[in-house]
Amino acid sequence: MKLEGKVWRYGDNIDTDVIIPARYLNTFDPAELAKHCMVDIDETFAANVKAGDIMVGGKNFGCGSSREHAPVAIKASGIPVVIAASFARIFYRNGINIGLPLLEIGDAVEKISADDVLKIDTDTGTIENLTTGDIFHAHPLPAFVQEIANAGGLINYIKSKK
Amino acid sequence: MTMAMTMSEKILARHAGLDSVEAGQLVICDLDLVMANDVTGPPSIKEFEKIGRPVFSSEKIALIPDHFQPAKDIKSADLAKIMRDFAGKNKIKHYYEQGRVGIEHVILPEFGIVAPGMLIIGADSHTCTYGAVNAFSTGVGTTDLAVGLATGKAWFKVPEAINVHITGKKPKNICGKDVILTLIGKIGVDGALYKALEFTGEGVAELSMTDRLTISNMAIEAGAKAGVFPYDEACELYVSRRVKKTFEPVTADPDAKYCATVEINLSELKPVVALPHLPENVKPVEELGEIKINQVVIGSCTNGRLEDLGIAAGILRGRKVHPNVRCIIIPGSQEIYKEAMLCHWLEIFIEAGCVVSCPTCGPCLGGYMGILSAGERCVSTTNRNFRGRMGHVDSEVYLASPFVAAASAITGKISTPDEVI
Image (cartoon, rainbow over all chains, first blue to last red; front, side):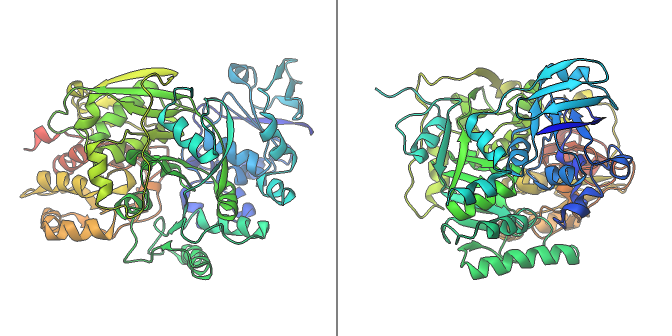
Protein backbone atom coordinates (compact mmCIF):
# COMPACT_ATOMS: atom_id res chain seq x y z
CA MET A 1 0.00 0.00 0.00
CA LYS A 2 1.37 3.46 -0.95
CA LEU A 3 0.33 6.41 1.19
CA GLU A 4 1.05 10.11 1.46
CA GLY A 5 -0.10 12.32 4.29
CA LYS A 6 0.50 15.01 6.87
CA VAL A 7 1.93 14.13 10.32
CA TRP A 8 0.22 14.34 13.71
CA ARG A 9 3.23 14.07 16.03
CA TYR A 10 3.04 12.77 19.61
CA GLY A 11 5.68 11.86 22.23
CA ASP A 12 6.83 8.78 24.17
CA ASN A 13 4.57 6.37 26.09
CA ILE A 14 1.30 7.43 24.45
CA ASP A 15 -1.05 5.17 26.44
CA THR A 16 -4.37 3.71 25.38
CA ASP A 17 -6.16 5.76 28.08
CA VAL A 18 -5.27 8.95 26.20
CA ILE A 19 -5.90 7.41 22.77
CA ILE A 20 -9.44 6.59 23.92
CA PRO A 21 -10.36 7.34 27.58
CA ALA A 22 -12.36 4.67 29.43
CA ARG A 23 -15.32 7.02 29.85
CA TYR A 24 -16.05 6.36 26.16
CA LEU A 25 -15.66 2.58 26.37
CA ASN A 26 -19.35 1.95 26.94
CA THR A 27 -19.59 1.65 23.15
CA PHE A 28 -17.50 -0.09 20.51
CA ASP A 29 -18.89 1.78 17.50
CA PRO A 30 -15.79 2.93 15.52
CA ALA A 31 -17.32 6.27 14.39
CA GLU A 32 -18.34 7.12 17.97
CA LEU A 33 -14.87 6.20 19.30
CA ALA A 34 -13.18 8.35 16.62
CA LYS A 35 -15.04 11.43 17.92
CA HIS A 36 -13.05 11.20 21.19
CA CYS A 37 -9.69 9.92 19.88
CA MET A 38 -6.66 11.59 21.61
CA VAL A 39 -8.99 14.08 23.38
CA ASP A 40 -7.07 14.10 26.68
CA ILE A 41 -3.76 15.19 25.10
CA ASP A 42 -4.92 16.91 21.91
CA GLU A 43 -8.39 18.44 21.76
CA THR A 44 -7.80 19.56 18.15
CA PHE A 45 -7.16 16.07 16.73
CA ALA A 46 -10.66 14.65 16.31
CA ALA A 47 -12.05 17.84 14.77
CA ASN A 48 -9.15 18.50 12.38
CA VAL A 49 -7.77 15.11 11.33
CA LYS A 50 -8.17 14.42 7.59
CA ALA A 51 -8.46 11.00 6.00
CA GLY A 52 -4.94 9.95 4.97
CA ASP A 53 -3.11 11.87 7.73
CA ILE A 54 -0.39 9.89 9.49
CA MET A 55 0.15 9.49 13.24
CA VAL A 56 3.72 9.41 14.57
CA GLY A 57 4.70 8.65 18.17
CA GLY A 58 7.86 7.99 20.19
CA LYS A 59 8.77 4.87 22.13
CA ASN A 60 6.28 2.42 23.71
CA PHE A 61 3.31 3.77 21.70
CA GLY A 62 -0.01 2.27 22.83
CA CYS A 63 1.12 1.14 26.29
CA GLY A 64 -1.43 0.26 28.96
CA SER A 65 -4.83 -1.31 28.49
CA SER A 66 -5.54 -4.08 25.97
CA ARG A 67 -8.53 -2.13 24.63
CA GLU A 68 -8.67 -2.68 20.88
CA HIS A 69 -10.92 0.38 20.91
CA ALA A 70 -7.63 2.36 20.75
CA PRO A 71 -6.34 1.27 17.30
CA VAL A 72 -9.97 1.10 16.13
CA ALA A 73 -10.47 4.78 17.12
CA ILE A 74 -7.26 5.78 15.29
CA LYS A 75 -8.22 3.84 12.17
CA ALA A 76 -11.77 5.22 12.21
CA SER A 77 -10.31 8.75 12.42
CA GLY A 78 -8.98 8.18 8.90
CA ILE A 79 -5.36 7.46 9.89
CA PRO A 80 -4.12 4.65 7.56
CA VAL A 81 -0.76 3.97 9.28
CA VAL A 82 0.99 4.69 12.61
CA ILE A 83 4.77 5.13 12.88
CA ALA A 84 6.63 4.97 16.20
CA ALA A 85 10.06 4.35 17.70
CA SER A 86 8.54 1.24 19.33
CA PHE A 87 5.05 -0.10 20.09
CA ALA A 88 3.66 -1.71 23.25
CA ARG A 89 3.07 -5.37 22.41
CA ILE A 90 -0.71 -5.69 22.87
CA PHE A 91 -1.31 -2.54 20.81
CA TYR A 92 1.06 -3.92 18.15
CA ARG A 93 -0.88 -7.20 17.87
CA ASN A 94 -4.18 -5.34 17.86
CA GLY A 95 -3.06 -3.02 15.05
CA ILE A 96 -2.01 -5.93 12.86
CA ASN A 97 -5.15 -7.87 13.74
CA ILE A 98 -7.50 -5.07 12.64
CA GLY A 99 -5.50 -4.23 9.50
CA LEU A 100 -3.91 -0.97 10.72
CA PRO A 101 -0.27 -1.05 9.57
CA LEU A 102 2.26 -0.11 12.30
CA LEU A 103 5.81 0.78 11.32
CA GLU A 104 8.58 0.64 13.92
CA ILE A 105 11.62 2.81 13.08
CA GLY A 106 13.52 3.33 16.36
CA ASP A 107 15.33 6.63 16.95
CA ALA A 108 14.79 7.74 13.32
CA VAL A 109 11.38 8.91 14.51
CA GLU A 110 13.12 12.00 15.92
CA LYS A 111 13.56 13.22 12.33
CA ILE A 112 9.81 13.50 11.84
CA SER A 113 7.99 16.63 13.06
CA ALA A 114 4.37 17.76 13.24
CA ASP A 115 2.92 18.74 9.85
CA ASP A 116 5.77 17.10 7.84
CA VAL A 117 4.46 15.28 4.79
CA LEU A 118 5.46 11.59 4.52
CA LYS A 119 5.32 9.21 1.58
CA ILE A 120 5.09 5.58 2.72
CA ASP A 121 5.23 2.18 1.05
CA THR A 122 3.85 -0.21 3.69
CA ASP A 123 4.90 -3.28 1.66
CA THR A 124 8.60 -2.39 1.70
CA GLY A 125 8.49 -0.34 4.91
CA THR A 126 10.12 2.64 3.16
CA ILE A 127 9.23 6.06 4.57
CA GLU A 128 10.21 9.27 2.76
CA ASN A 129 9.92 12.58 4.58
CA LEU A 130 9.00 14.89 1.69
CA THR A 131 9.43 17.95 3.93
CA THR A 132 13.03 17.21 4.97
CA GLY A 133 14.16 14.74 2.30
CA ASP A 134 15.07 12.03 4.87
CA ILE A 135 14.39 8.39 4.00
CA PHE A 136 13.82 5.71 6.68
CA HIS A 137 13.25 1.95 6.62
CA ALA A 138 10.88 0.29 9.10
CA HIS A 139 11.83 -3.00 10.79
CA PRO A 140 10.36 -5.76 8.57
CA LEU A 141 7.40 -7.85 9.82
CA PRO A 142 7.92 -11.61 10.30
CA ALA A 143 6.50 -13.47 7.23
CA PHE A 144 3.62 -15.02 9.21
CA VAL A 145 2.59 -11.63 10.58
CA GLN A 146 2.87 -10.14 7.08
CA GLU A 147 0.38 -12.80 5.92
CA ILE A 148 -2.13 -11.61 8.55
CA ALA A 149 -1.57 -7.99 7.50
CA ASN A 150 -1.97 -8.87 3.81
CA ALA A 151 -5.27 -10.67 4.53
CA GLY A 152 -6.57 -7.39 5.98
CA GLY A 153 -6.49 -8.62 9.57
CA LEU A 154 -6.74 -11.77 11.65
CA ILE A 155 -10.47 -12.48 11.17
CA ASN A 156 -10.09 -12.51 7.37
CA TYR A 157 -6.93 -14.60 7.72
CA ILE A 158 -8.71 -17.22 9.85
CA LYS A 159 -11.73 -17.28 7.50
CA SER A 160 -9.40 -17.84 4.53
CA LYS A 161 -7.88 -20.87 6.35
CA LYS A 162 -11.22 -22.67 6.86
CA MET B 1 19.14 -33.71 24.55
CA THR B 2 16.61 -30.87 24.85
CA MET B 3 17.63 -27.25 25.21
CA ALA B 4 17.61 -25.53 28.58
CA MET B 5 14.40 -23.50 28.86
CA THR B 6 12.79 -20.77 30.96
CA MET B 7 9.35 -21.31 32.53
CA SER B 8 7.76 -19.29 29.68
CA GLU B 9 9.52 -21.38 27.02
CA LYS B 10 8.43 -24.64 28.70
CA ILE B 11 4.76 -23.66 28.85
CA LEU B 12 4.73 -22.40 25.25
CA ALA B 13 6.59 -25.51 23.99
CA ARG B 14 4.17 -27.84 25.76
CA HIS B 15 1.14 -26.06 24.30
CA ALA B 16 2.65 -25.97 20.80
CA GLY B 17 3.24 -29.73 20.91
CA LEU B 18 7.02 -29.25 20.69
CA ASP B 19 9.88 -30.66 22.79
CA SER B 20 11.52 -27.28 22.97
CA VAL B 21 11.24 -23.70 21.74
CA GLU B 22 13.57 -20.74 21.94
CA ALA B 23 13.12 -16.98 22.24
CA GLY B 24 12.10 -15.33 18.98
CA GLN B 25 10.38 -18.44 17.56
CA LEU B 26 6.79 -18.03 16.32
CA VAL B 27 4.48 -20.78 17.59
CA ILE B 28 0.77 -21.59 17.42
CA CYS B 29 -0.45 -22.86 20.77
CA ASP B 30 -3.52 -24.57 22.24
CA LEU B 31 -5.08 -22.42 24.95
CA ASP B 32 -6.28 -23.66 28.35
CA LEU B 33 -8.44 -20.61 29.05
CA VAL B 34 -9.79 -17.65 27.07
CA MET B 35 -11.10 -14.74 29.16
CA ALA B 36 -12.93 -11.44 28.54
CA ASN B 37 -14.82 -8.79 30.52
CA ASP B 38 -17.84 -6.55 29.87
CA VAL B 39 -15.73 -3.94 28.00
CA THR B 40 -13.76 -6.31 25.77
CA GLY B 41 -16.17 -9.26 25.60
CA PRO B 42 -18.96 -7.64 23.52
CA PRO B 43 -16.70 -6.46 20.65
CA SER B 44 -14.96 -9.88 20.76
CA ILE B 45 -18.33 -11.59 20.44
CA LYS B 46 -19.13 -9.42 17.40
CA GLU B 47 -15.82 -10.39 15.74
CA PHE B 48 -16.31 -14.04 16.78
CA GLU B 49 -19.66 -14.12 14.99
CA LYS B 50 -17.96 -13.04 11.72
CA ILE B 51 -15.83 -16.21 11.83
CA GLY B 52 -18.97 -18.39 11.74
CA ARG B 53 -17.83 -21.25 13.98
CA PRO B 54 -19.10 -22.47 17.36
CA VAL B 55 -17.09 -21.75 20.54
CA PHE B 56 -14.12 -24.12 20.86
CA SER B 57 -15.15 -25.14 24.38
CA SER B 58 -17.84 -24.04 26.81
CA GLU B 59 -15.60 -25.10 29.74
CA LYS B 60 -12.44 -23.15 28.82
CA ILE B 61 -13.98 -19.69 28.41
CA ALA B 62 -14.45 -17.19 31.24
CA LEU B 63 -16.68 -14.12 30.79
CA ILE B 64 -16.51 -11.76 33.76
CA PRO B 65 -18.75 -8.66 33.98
CA ASP B 66 -16.63 -6.53 36.32
CA HIS B 67 -15.56 -3.26 34.67
CA PHE B 68 -18.72 -1.13 34.48
CA GLN B 69 -20.99 -3.50 36.45
CA PRO B 70 -23.39 -3.28 38.26
CA ALA B 71 -24.18 -1.25 35.15
CA LYS B 72 -23.15 2.40 35.49
CA ASP B 73 -25.36 3.56 32.61
CA ILE B 74 -27.63 2.29 29.85
CA LYS B 75 -24.84 1.63 27.35
CA SER B 76 -22.94 -0.42 29.97
CA ALA B 77 -26.12 -2.37 30.72
CA ASP B 78 -26.34 -3.11 26.97
CA LEU B 79 -22.74 -4.42 26.99
CA ALA B 80 -23.48 -6.67 29.97
CA LYS B 81 -26.58 -7.98 28.22
CA ILE B 82 -24.63 -8.92 25.05
CA MET B 83 -22.22 -10.96 27.17
CA ARG B 84 -24.94 -12.51 29.36
CA ASP B 85 -26.96 -13.61 26.31
CA PHE B 86 -23.85 -15.03 24.64
CA ALA B 87 -22.89 -16.92 27.81
CA GLY B 88 -26.38 -18.37 28.11
CA LYS B 89 -26.62 -19.40 24.46
CA ASN B 90 -23.18 -21.03 24.46
CA LYS B 91 -23.51 -22.57 27.95
CA ILE B 92 -20.30 -20.84 29.10
CA LYS B 93 -19.31 -22.50 32.39
CA HIS B 94 -17.36 -19.59 33.84
CA TYR B 95 -19.85 -16.76 33.54
CA TYR B 96 -20.69 -15.15 36.86
CA GLU B 97 -23.57 -12.78 37.52
CA GLN B 98 -23.63 -9.72 39.81
CA GLY B 99 -23.58 -10.83 43.44
CA ARG B 100 -21.49 -13.88 42.56
CA VAL B 101 -18.88 -12.19 40.39
CA GLY B 102 -15.81 -10.21 41.43
CA ILE B 103 -12.86 -8.58 39.67
CA GLU B 104 -11.67 -11.02 36.97
CA HIS B 105 -8.04 -11.29 38.12
CA VAL B 106 -9.13 -11.72 41.73
CA ILE B 107 -11.74 -14.45 41.21
CA LEU B 108 -10.05 -16.61 38.58
CA PRO B 109 -7.19 -17.56 40.97
CA GLU B 110 -9.59 -17.60 43.96
CA PHE B 111 -12.01 -20.00 42.23
CA GLY B 112 -9.12 -22.26 41.12
CA ILE B 113 -9.92 -21.67 37.43
CA VAL B 114 -6.29 -20.80 36.68
CA ALA B 115 -3.59 -23.30 37.62
CA PRO B 116 0.16 -23.90 37.31
CA GLY B 117 1.46 -24.69 33.82
CA MET B 118 -1.63 -23.32 32.05
CA LEU B 119 -1.54 -21.11 28.94
CA ILE B 120 -4.12 -18.32 29.14
CA ILE B 121 -5.11 -15.32 27.05
CA GLY B 122 -7.45 -12.62 28.27
CA ALA B 123 -8.83 -9.49 26.65
CA ASP B 124 -7.52 -7.42 29.51
CA SER B 125 -3.94 -6.26 29.88
CA HIS B 126 -3.72 -7.41 33.52
CA THR B 127 -4.30 -11.03 32.49
CA CYS B 128 -0.58 -11.39 33.30
CA THR B 129 -1.71 -11.68 36.97
CA TYR B 130 -1.92 -15.50 36.72
CA GLY B 131 1.85 -15.76 36.35
CA ALA B 132 1.73 -15.69 40.16
CA VAL B 133 0.35 -19.25 40.09
CA ASN B 134 3.05 -20.44 37.65
CA ALA B 135 0.89 -20.01 34.51
CA PHE B 136 1.87 -18.24 31.27
CA SER B 137 -0.85 -15.72 30.88
CA THR B 138 -1.05 -12.63 28.73
CA GLY B 139 -3.35 -9.82 27.62
CA VAL B 140 -4.68 -9.56 24.06
CA GLY B 141 -7.18 -7.42 22.18
CA THR B 142 -10.68 -8.25 21.04
CA THR B 143 -9.69 -9.80 17.69
CA ASP B 144 -7.15 -12.24 19.18
CA LEU B 145 -9.79 -13.06 21.78
CA ALA B 146 -12.45 -13.66 19.11
CA VAL B 147 -10.16 -16.08 17.30
CA GLY B 148 -9.38 -17.74 20.65
CA LEU B 149 -13.12 -18.22 21.31
CA ALA B 150 -13.53 -19.91 17.91
CA THR B 151 -10.34 -21.95 17.64
CA GLY B 152 -8.87 -22.32 21.14
CA LYS B 153 -5.56 -21.26 19.64
CA ALA B 154 -3.32 -18.20 19.46
CA TRP B 155 0.03 -17.37 17.89
CA PHE B 156 2.90 -16.25 20.09
CA LYS B 157 6.41 -15.02 19.57
CA VAL B 158 8.34 -16.84 22.29
CA PRO B 159 9.61 -13.99 24.51
CA GLU B 160 13.08 -13.53 25.87
CA ALA B 161 12.99 -13.54 29.67
CA ILE B 162 14.41 -11.13 32.22
CA ASN B 163 15.52 -12.87 35.42
CA VAL B 164 14.23 -10.88 38.40
CA HIS B 165 16.42 -12.28 41.16
CA ILE B 166 14.89 -11.69 44.59
CA THR B 167 16.89 -11.89 47.81
CA GLY B 168 16.62 -10.64 51.39
CA LYS B 169 13.81 -10.43 53.94
CA LYS B 170 10.60 -8.43 53.57
CA PRO B 171 10.65 -5.54 56.09
CA LYS B 172 7.65 -4.32 58.11
CA ASN B 173 5.11 -2.19 56.16
CA ILE B 174 6.39 -3.47 52.78
CA CYS B 175 4.36 -5.63 50.41
CA GLY B 176 4.30 -6.85 46.81
CA LYS B 177 3.28 -3.39 45.56
CA ASP B 178 6.58 -1.89 46.75
CA VAL B 179 8.45 -4.75 45.05
CA ILE B 180 6.83 -4.25 41.64
CA LEU B 181 6.86 -0.42 41.77
CA THR B 182 10.56 -0.51 42.69
CA LEU B 183 11.22 -2.89 39.79
CA ILE B 184 9.30 -0.70 37.30
CA GLY B 185 11.17 2.34 38.65
CA LYS B 186 14.44 0.53 37.86
CA ILE B 187 13.67 -0.79 34.37
CA GLY B 188 11.04 1.71 33.12
CA VAL B 189 7.60 1.32 31.56
CA ASP B 190 9.14 -0.28 28.46
CA GLY B 191 11.96 -2.07 30.29
CA ALA B 192 10.45 -5.48 29.57
CA LEU B 193 8.78 -4.68 26.22
CA TYR B 194 8.12 -7.92 24.24
CA LYS B 195 9.75 -9.89 27.10
CA ALA B 196 8.67 -12.04 30.04
CA LEU B 197 9.66 -11.37 33.64
CA GLU B 198 10.62 -14.54 35.51
CA PHE B 199 11.12 -14.39 39.26
CA THR B 200 13.88 -16.43 40.93
CA GLY B 201 15.93 -16.46 44.13
CA GLU B 202 15.45 -17.36 47.78
CA GLY B 203 13.53 -14.10 48.34
CA VAL B 204 10.52 -15.52 46.47
CA ALA B 205 9.68 -17.63 49.55
CA GLU B 206 9.33 -14.37 51.52
CA LEU B 207 6.48 -13.26 49.26
CA SER B 208 2.90 -14.27 50.05
CA MET B 209 0.62 -15.35 47.20
CA THR B 210 -1.10 -11.95 47.53
CA ASP B 211 2.30 -10.26 47.06
CA ARG B 212 2.97 -12.41 44.00
CA LEU B 213 -0.46 -11.73 42.45
CA THR B 214 0.20 -7.97 42.85
CA ILE B 215 3.67 -8.29 41.30
CA SER B 216 2.61 -10.42 38.30
CA ASN B 217 -0.44 -8.15 37.82
CA MET B 218 1.78 -5.14 37.14
CA ALA B 219 4.30 -6.91 34.86
CA ILE B 220 2.45 -5.22 31.96
CA GLU B 221 3.32 -1.81 33.44
CA ALA B 222 6.95 -2.59 32.52
CA GLY B 223 5.72 -3.62 29.06
CA ALA B 224 6.10 -7.34 29.84
CA LYS B 225 4.15 -10.08 28.12
CA ALA B 226 4.02 -12.15 31.33
CA GLY B 227 5.41 -12.23 34.87
CA VAL B 228 5.93 -15.82 35.97
CA PHE B 229 6.67 -17.11 39.48
CA PRO B 230 8.11 -20.54 40.26
CA TYR B 231 5.96 -23.31 41.71
CA ASP B 232 6.97 -23.66 45.35
CA GLU B 233 5.46 -24.63 48.70
CA ALA B 234 3.36 -21.45 49.01
CA CYS B 235 2.00 -21.84 45.49
CA GLU B 236 1.25 -25.52 46.09
CA LEU B 237 -0.65 -24.71 49.28
CA TYR B 238 -2.62 -21.95 47.49
CA VAL B 239 -3.68 -24.01 44.47
CA SER B 240 -4.24 -27.30 46.33
CA ARG B 241 -7.14 -25.68 48.21
CA ARG B 242 -8.70 -24.29 45.06
CA VAL B 243 -7.85 -26.13 41.85
CA LYS B 244 -9.96 -29.25 41.27
CA LYS B 245 -8.42 -30.48 38.00
CA THR B 246 -4.97 -31.96 37.44
CA PHE B 247 -2.18 -29.62 36.43
CA GLU B 248 1.50 -29.75 35.55
CA PRO B 249 3.73 -27.02 37.04
CA VAL B 250 6.92 -25.85 35.32
CA THR B 251 10.39 -25.17 36.70
CA ALA B 252 13.06 -23.18 34.88
CA ASP B 253 16.13 -25.20 33.94
CA PRO B 254 19.19 -24.17 35.99
CA ASP B 255 21.01 -23.16 32.78
CA ALA B 256 18.01 -21.43 31.13
CA LYS B 257 18.98 -18.37 29.09
CA TYR B 258 17.88 -14.92 30.28
CA CYS B 259 18.48 -11.72 28.32
CA ALA B 260 19.13 -9.75 31.52
CA THR B 261 19.12 -10.08 35.30
CA VAL B 262 17.70 -7.49 37.70
CA GLU B 263 18.42 -7.78 41.42
CA ILE B 264 15.81 -6.94 44.04
CA ASN B 265 16.94 -7.11 47.67
CA LEU B 266 13.76 -7.10 49.77
CA SER B 267 15.67 -5.98 52.89
CA GLU B 268 16.48 -2.65 51.17
CA LEU B 269 12.92 -1.81 50.09
CA LYS B 270 11.15 1.30 51.36
CA PRO B 271 7.49 2.28 51.00
CA VAL B 272 7.27 3.92 47.56
CA VAL B 273 4.72 5.64 45.32
CA ALA B 274 4.59 6.15 41.56
CA LEU B 275 4.00 9.84 40.87
CA PRO B 276 1.82 11.04 37.98
CA HIS B 277 1.65 10.22 35.09
CA LEU B 278 3.67 7.02 34.63
CA PRO B 279 4.14 3.92 36.82
CA GLU B 280 7.94 4.34 36.43
CA ASN B 281 8.02 7.68 38.31
CA VAL B 282 8.79 5.86 41.55
CA LYS B 283 10.02 7.60 44.72
CA PRO B 284 10.28 6.63 48.40
CA VAL B 285 7.46 8.24 50.40
CA GLU B 286 10.01 9.70 52.85
CA GLU B 287 11.51 11.85 50.05
CA LEU B 288 8.23 13.40 48.92
CA GLY B 289 7.59 16.34 51.25
CA GLU B 290 3.95 17.27 51.88
CA ILE B 291 1.57 16.21 49.11
CA LYS B 292 -2.03 16.81 50.16
CA ILE B 293 -4.69 14.46 48.77
CA ASN B 294 -8.47 14.40 48.19
CA GLN B 295 -9.17 10.70 47.71
CA VAL B 296 -7.86 7.22 48.53
CA VAL B 297 -8.84 4.05 46.66
CA ILE B 298 -8.02 0.65 48.18
CA GLY B 299 -8.96 -2.23 45.90
CA SER B 300 -8.62 -3.39 42.25
CA CYS B 301 -7.11 -6.46 40.56
CA THR B 302 -3.77 -5.26 41.92
CA ASN B 303 -4.58 -4.84 45.64
CA GLY B 304 -8.19 -5.86 46.32
CA ARG B 305 -7.45 -9.15 48.09
CA LEU B 306 -8.15 -10.16 51.69
CA GLU B 307 -4.55 -9.56 52.82
CA ASP B 308 -4.71 -6.04 51.31
CA LEU B 309 -7.93 -5.22 53.17
CA GLY B 310 -6.37 -6.67 56.34
CA ILE B 311 -3.44 -4.25 55.99
CA ALA B 312 -5.86 -1.34 55.57
CA ALA B 313 -7.98 -2.46 58.54
CA GLY B 314 -4.88 -2.74 60.75
CA ILE B 315 -4.04 0.88 60.08
CA LEU B 316 -7.57 2.31 60.09
CA ARG B 317 -8.64 0.50 63.29
CA GLY B 318 -9.73 3.08 65.86
CA ARG B 319 -8.75 6.00 63.58
CA LYS B 320 -10.66 8.39 61.35
CA VAL B 321 -10.28 9.29 57.69
CA HIS B 322 -9.01 12.90 57.36
CA PRO B 323 -11.90 15.40 57.00
CA ASN B 324 -10.67 16.48 53.53
CA VAL B 325 -10.38 12.92 52.18
CA ARG B 326 -12.81 10.39 50.67
CA CYS B 327 -11.55 6.84 51.25
CA ILE B 328 -13.12 4.21 48.96
CA ILE B 329 -12.58 0.54 49.76
CA ILE B 330 -13.49 -2.09 47.16
CA PRO B 331 -13.17 -5.80 48.04
CA GLY B 332 -12.06 -7.75 44.94
CA SER B 333 -14.66 -10.52 45.25
CA GLN B 334 -17.81 -11.51 47.13
CA GLU B 335 -15.77 -14.06 49.11
CA ILE B 336 -13.29 -11.36 50.18
CA TYR B 337 -16.22 -9.05 51.01
CA LYS B 338 -17.72 -11.76 53.23
CA GLU B 339 -14.41 -12.63 54.91
CA ALA B 340 -13.76 -8.93 55.60
CA MET B 341 -17.20 -8.79 57.20
CA LEU B 342 -16.54 -11.88 59.35
CA CYS B 343 -13.19 -10.36 60.44
CA HIS B 344 -15.12 -7.17 61.44
CA TRP B 345 -12.97 -5.14 59.04
CA LEU B 346 -15.99 -3.62 57.29
CA GLU B 347 -16.99 -2.24 60.70
CA ILE B 348 -13.52 -0.71 61.09
CA PHE B 349 -13.76 0.88 57.63
CA ILE B 350 -17.23 2.31 58.20
CA GLU B 351 -16.36 3.54 61.70
CA ALA B 352 -13.32 5.30 60.17
CA GLY B 353 -15.56 7.02 57.62
CA CYS B 354 -14.75 4.99 54.48
CA VAL B 355 -17.02 4.18 51.55
CA VAL B 356 -17.27 0.38 51.12
CA SER B 357 -18.34 -0.73 47.63
CA CYS B 358 -19.30 -4.02 46.03
CA PRO B 359 -16.55 -5.62 43.88
CA THR B 360 -15.92 -3.69 40.63
CA CYS B 361 -13.01 -2.28 38.60
CA GLY B 362 -14.92 1.03 38.90
CA PRO B 363 -12.60 3.96 39.62
CA CYS B 364 -9.30 2.30 38.60
CA LEU B 365 -9.96 3.03 34.92
CA GLY B 366 -12.12 6.09 35.50
CA GLY B 367 -15.31 4.08 35.05
CA TYR B 368 -17.38 5.11 38.07
CA MET B 369 -17.45 4.89 41.91
CA GLY B 370 -14.85 7.58 42.61
CA ILE B 371 -14.11 9.75 39.55
CA LEU B 372 -11.76 12.69 40.17
CA SER B 373 -12.49 16.35 39.45
CA ALA B 374 -9.97 18.81 37.94
CA GLY B 375 -6.93 19.33 40.17
CA GLU B 376 -7.81 16.51 42.60
CA ARG B 377 -5.22 14.03 43.86
CA CYS B 378 -5.78 10.38 44.70
CA VAL B 379 -3.54 7.82 46.40
CA SER B 380 -4.59 4.54 44.89
CA THR B 381 -3.62 0.88 45.23
CA THR B 382 -4.51 0.40 41.54
CA ASN B 383 -2.06 -0.10 38.66
CA ARG B 384 -2.03 2.93 36.35
CA ASN B 385 -1.57 6.66 36.88
CA PHE B 386 -1.78 7.81 33.25
CA ARG B 387 -3.14 11.27 32.53
CA GLY B 388 -6.91 11.28 33.05
CA ARG B 389 -6.95 7.60 34.10
CA MET B 390 -9.27 8.13 37.10
CA GLY B 391 -11.26 11.08 35.79
CA HIS B 392 -10.50 14.66 34.77
CA VAL B 393 -7.45 15.14 32.56
CA ASP B 394 -6.03 17.53 35.20
CA SER B 395 -6.42 15.10 38.12
CA GLU B 396 -3.52 13.09 39.56
CA VAL B 397 -3.12 9.47 40.67
CA TYR B 398 -0.30 8.31 42.99
CA LEU B 399 0.11 4.52 42.97
CA ALA B 400 0.91 2.97 46.35
CA SER B 401 0.58 -0.07 48.61
CA PRO B 402 -2.40 -0.54 50.95
CA PHE B 403 -0.05 0.42 53.82
CA VAL B 404 0.65 3.85 52.30
CA ALA B 405 -2.92 4.31 51.01
CA ALA B 406 -4.52 3.66 54.42
CA ALA B 407 -1.99 5.84 56.27
CA SER B 408 -2.51 8.65 53.76
CA ALA B 409 -6.30 8.46 54.20
CA ILE B 410 -5.79 9.31 57.88
CA THR B 411 -3.23 12.12 57.52
CA GLY B 412 -4.68 13.70 54.36
CA LYS B 413 -1.22 13.67 52.73
CA ILE B 414 0.96 10.93 51.27
CA SER B 415 2.30 9.12 54.35
CA THR B 416 3.89 5.91 55.60
CA PRO B 417 2.21 3.87 58.37
CA ASP B 418 4.97 5.05 60.76
CA GLU B 419 3.36 8.50 60.69
CA VAL B 420 0.05 7.23 62.12
CA ILE B 421 0.83 4.15 64.20
